[in-house]
Length: 221
Ligand SMILES: [Zn+2]
Image (cartoon, rainbow, N blue to C red; front, side, top):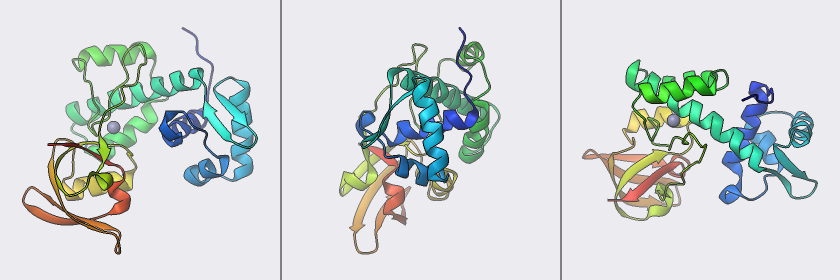
């Protein structure tokens, strides 16, 4: 199957738009995208216009941008490669959660679909990446997990299901706090004034920022 040539940077635009699309459907403002990607707004506009011309996104002057079906399929392909590679780097090569992610950020753009399919067989059909995020299947369907952000869970006991935003600074905190997928966590206090949560993990009390609690997803235990 031949694919449109897209640069690594263009693919990263699509990935970021996907992450920022409210409910996976709404429009994303180019200004927010520029902030997130740390590019000048003028650069962002040019790239968005080019991606719209190629059919990956819809660009409306006042609403902003959203991915088309073609754009979403492209993102699913990248996420599948990214998460499959992470399983290999983490489970087979022994990389930690940060290194596995960083290595996957590069390899996701260069490996063929055939190699990813072979990797899937080699790894015995993993369903989740080491950060707990679902791996899109061969038909590029992306599962929507039914979990909620730790920040919105309220007091009580939960199980960490995944780390929704795999930025290196977030993953550093995951390693430091042991708040990893599968971990039992109890929310003891929600401190709105200091914008922190007091939680207990493995009988250890910890104070974590609300910003971090936004991207840690949990299920009731
Ligand atoms: Zn991951």
